[in-house]
Structure formats: C-alpha cells, structure tokens
Image (cartoon, rainbow, N blue to C red; front, top):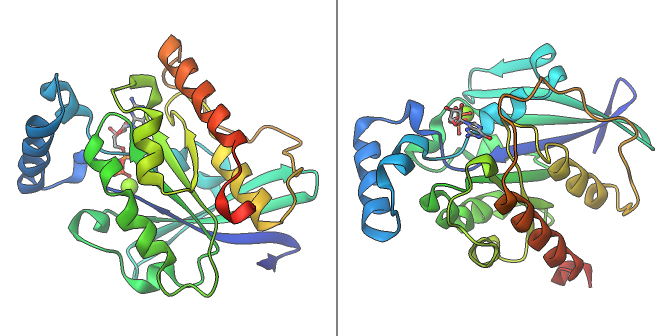
Length: 243
Ligand code: GDP
Ligand code: MG
C-alpha cells in the first residue's frame, strides 16, 4: 500500500477474458464452437453477447475518465478510481488491458506490484467462467503474499444459465460478486470486498456512493434477485483463509 498525495492507494489488476468485439474471427469461431458443443440452447444469442467487459466496468466510475493514463509499454490503461470511506478517501489504480488478454497470458510486468485483483467473467458466456482458475493462477503466481481476489460475474442484466454452484466451483474459494456494469448494479461491491481485506477492517464502509455514469439498462429480473440472494447467503460461510 502506498500513499499518493495523502491518499491511500492500491494497485488493482482487472483481468479476465476479452470482449468479443475486438476478437479476431478465428477466436470468434472457436468460441462459437465451444458454446455450441457444450451448453448453449440459444447459441446465436450467446455468440452475440459473449465474453466480459472489464473496460466497460471501469468506465462507469466518473473519476476513471478524469484520471487515466496509458502505459504504452504494457498496453495498459490505468484508471484512478476514488472512493470516499469512513477511513478517508481511498484510491484504486485499476490496470486494464488494451485487449492482449485474447492472445494468451498477460506479461508478468502487468501484475508487478499488484495488491489485489478483480477476475471478471461473463455470466452469459460459460467459457469465460471456465477460464477463471487460469486467471487466478496468473494473479497469484510469484506474489509475495496471497493478494485478495474477487471473482466477479458481469452482465447479470442478461442472466444466462450459470448457477452459483458453478461459479463457486471455478472461484475456488475466492469471494464472489455478481454485477451489471451497464446498470451499475453492485458496482461498488467488489471494491468494498477488496478494501475490507486490504485494510483488514471488516467494518470499512463507503460514506458516499461512488460517482457513476447513469445506467444504460434497467435491472428488473427476478432471476437477478434470486442469484444475488444466493451469493449473499454463500458469503455468510467464512472462507478458509478467514478462519
Ligand atoms: P472487454 O473487451 O472485456 O474489455 O469488454 P468491453 O468492455 O469492450 O465490453 C464488451 C461488450 O459487452 C460491449 O459491447 C459492452 O457494451 C457489453 N457490456 C459491458 N457490460 C455489460 C453489462 O453489464 N451488460 C450487458 N448487457 N452488456 C455489457
Ligand atoms: Mg477491455
């Protein structure tokens, strides 16, 4: 942890499979085949919406657009997201890639000095869930201590067929959170989970809602509510590392 201009700051790496918008057609076909073979009742739909959107996610926070830097050597965009907490302002320097995640593991320098990670997947694209253990491995590999990780399922506004049980299997004991970047639903949750672990203060709170851009979609599904309740319930069971 470092203080930048008096603000407690943490490096957070945002990782997970890439969105399909920037994927080469080769990868597109590959993903399509996997979905078709294994799971999808409506492959057409799944193909269209595939993969996650870590970029969309960070863009929701207004300070993210104000304070961002492009690190050309890493192909990384770093957004400085600030939160008002009962311990004063806290900042995450959120590292996001410019799309390299589609072509293999990210470079070790991308992870260098990372203090926590959000591993994101797309609730409508099962392949992105199955890849979580490999992202977790990369995020933990070579770190001096076990950095806190939250496994985040995005796009809950489009709920697919992934169950909490499946998520838990791939999350391997890490905290789980579901959200919808486009509706801002649960936006601040992963940050809160990480901050409580990082500061070892389980009562840390946000004193103001984060400044977010207005929602693009409205959440209304009963399925979302049910999944969220299940996640909450599961969260009551302490994780192994918390005794
Ligand atoms: P990245 O390549 O993983 O960074 O993903 P992007 O941020 O580029 O997003 C991929 C696609 O998913 C874009 O078309 C986004 O508009 C869309 N998207 C992002 N977040 C959400 C969400 O919460 N719900 C829905 N329905 N679509 C989303
Ligand atoms: Mg991106």
